[in-house]
Length: 403
RNA sequence: GGGAGGAUUCCCGAGUGGCUAAAGGGGGCAGACUGUAAAUCUGUUAGCUACGCUUUCGGUGGUUCGAAUCCACCUCCUCCCA
Image 1 (cartoon, chains in turn red, green):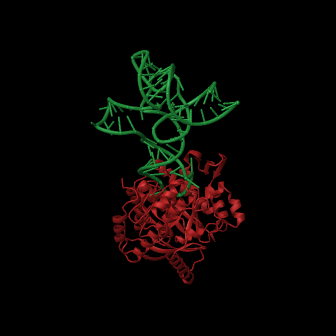
Image 2 (spheres, helix red, strand yellow):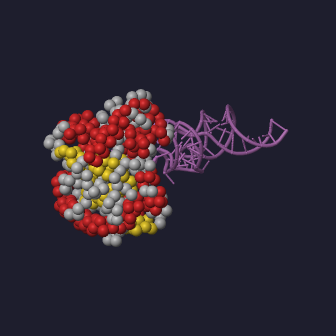
Image 3 (cartoon, rainbow, N blue to C red):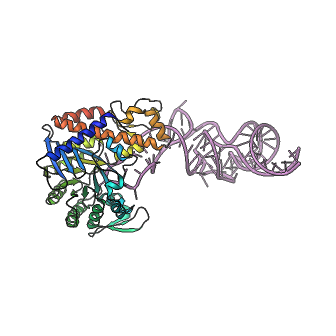
């Protein structure tokens, strides 16, 4: 899947690399944040994150490849969308094929043939998503494997060991993604345990020279707890900080309120990563509140399930009304899919269960989000992020209607 | 020519007197999906002047308070033997 615009993106990325190498700031730590500018209108940040596997501009969206693959897309295709970093997962790769296999393969980059940056989640999200199969203790989390039912103990130390073996550029502290809703007492216990686990992660992390450990802020939907967690987590000098436990069922308004309690307390010279957020409206609102990095399964998942993102909002392209719609998914999109295929064809493929249809929808959705982020960065550059937000929402609306 | 078994709502296929507008699957339609147990899941799928009524289980006619279910004849289909 080739097209001209994508090649331009690649060029931009190379330019970014040059900037980094010639920057007198060149630091010894493996991953660092280079601020470029702050939007005068919104306070949104433009920057570059430097990693051992290349740099990427922020605000950035990271496609998710849980099992060492962004479902349906080849690494070459992911690059075409403009992605400079992708996500993978500790728990899943530990269960299968086993982190030793990936280590012996030469690390995750080599194993999956992805030479740009990789961030691995620690398994903290599986504490949330596999809640029926696990038991939390101070020591760690006992999991019953979702594959074969075998029992495993994931601890902060183990999460570091596995991620060290994987060799990802950014590794995440082992946390508990606190479920929503959570009562305040539980949310407090949970966030404090996540802080204690972070201390253990820092002690256990052996490859600080090539891998950056990010801490994760929790605190559920309680402003005081978010502040407490932010203070605790940022008291450790780390190359970056994430905000977790959001976008887990609470309203968009509540999520944004929590961000407003959190980001002002985070250091300005480190990247800020909002975990698990990926609809365009959430991305834009996160950027305005000072977020630099996002990841989400949304574009690939909804794509596989027949929904695509467009400049006029999402459409369920699987629906009957598109059976004879020979237009591209989005007539304003320059991606390979929109240049070559129609809604009617993609609908047909998805209805017929053809894997190519899933691929096309996934490719477009990832490209679409990458393109939104590119426009976001441009808006910051021009100090018009709030204007951009208004223009975008007027045209595309909300991904999900606000509650 | 002889024998046997069938025909059920869009399709396949349960159901063998009332609890049946009729299981289940498929297909159709619609929705959900946000650090991936997801190419998954959920709802819906006779009609209507709808909290009730009407039509429906090959056709016609019977038995019965009541039939997709029992009986008779008819039509068509499949299989086996000649």
